[in-house]
Amino acid sequence: MENKHITLGEFIIENQKHFKYSSGELSRLLNSIRLAAKVVNHEVGKAGLVDIIGTVGETNIQGEDQQKLDLFANNVFKTALINREIVCGITSEEEEDFITIQGKTNSHRNKYVVLIDPLDGSSNIDVNVSVGTIFSIYRRSTPMGMPVKKEDFLQKGNEQVAAGYIIYGTSTMLVYTTGHGVNGFTLNPAIGSFYLSHANMRFPENGNTFSINNGNYTHFPQGVKDYLKFCQAEEGNRPYTYRYVGSMVSDFHRNLINGGIYMYPTSSKNPEGKLRLLYECNPMAFLTEQAGGKASDGYIRIMDIKPSTLHQRCPIFCGSRLMVEKAETCMKKYL
Ligand code: AHM
Ligand code: MG
Image 1 (tube, helix red, strand yellow):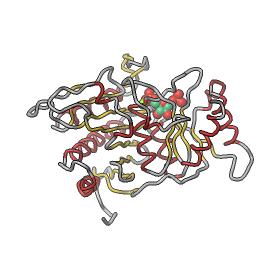
Image 2 (tube, rainbow, N blue to C red):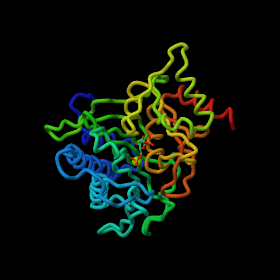
Image 3 (tube, rainbow, N blue to C red):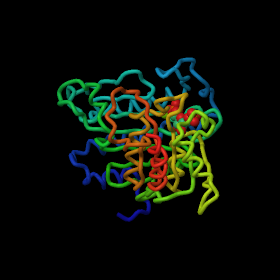
Image 4 (cartoon, rainbow, N blue to C red):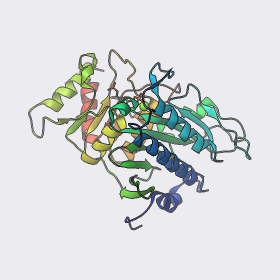
């Protein structure tokens, strides 16, 4: 397919042939995410203008303040997904439990479950720094015709059929994979269409940027401290460049394009790590591998971890393969 002027909608249909069960439902599901992304983008773009920023006064189930835009984005994605006869269940970083969707005409016969972080990095909204949406899609694992169960959402990351993110940045982009590489689409705001702008995105095998919250340094395990020392040593192409936006989607996106590693390890403050396996680590791991990179918890492949709870946290090291392998070597020394 000639890349010029291909819209996301056209690309989704054109690539439907890759899907194992090609009934068009996954295409329609991706199209509903595309639509919701445009609505959220519009609202995020106005965040500084209207009285929508600031905390609602509620806290989410992890005890963190929720911002109004988190709730807005959560509702937009939920509505877009519920109103089509495709999705049988949704779980979100902003919801305590999963949502069952019976479907209007087809009692519990929809095939897909969607796991979503509707607005990641939301503490960046009031300071006008990029935020993102992360999504992950699985086929249900329990038989059709019955309400979804928790186990439908607790599948290993390697069962994902699609995953992606939207970055609300200097441009708004939607980047996704269905297991056949990673492609990025940029929104033309004047027309309201996403265009294929980054075909077949690949992590450079090696990079020279590392991203981590260095403020937590003293709380990191020794393996992470050793790797950070390596990154900062005067040798070869080092010291590497240090960049940390504090929005995973933005840090990941930069590293995907330029080469680099993003890390959110365990620490004595967050012994399980901070990021959620289902809503953040697994989808980003799927994208990483599809782009030729590596995603690990420091020891094993993220997508091989069997989740046990919906809001489980997980340490993550993801990005350029050689950088992640070096970080793993440092971690494994202290096993
Ligand atoms: P959130 O889902 O509550 O927004 O948290 C996830 C975000 C990531 O986007 C980002 O990389 C990380 O938390 C930043 O955390 P910290 O401020 O601890 O470095
Ligand atoms: Mg998040």
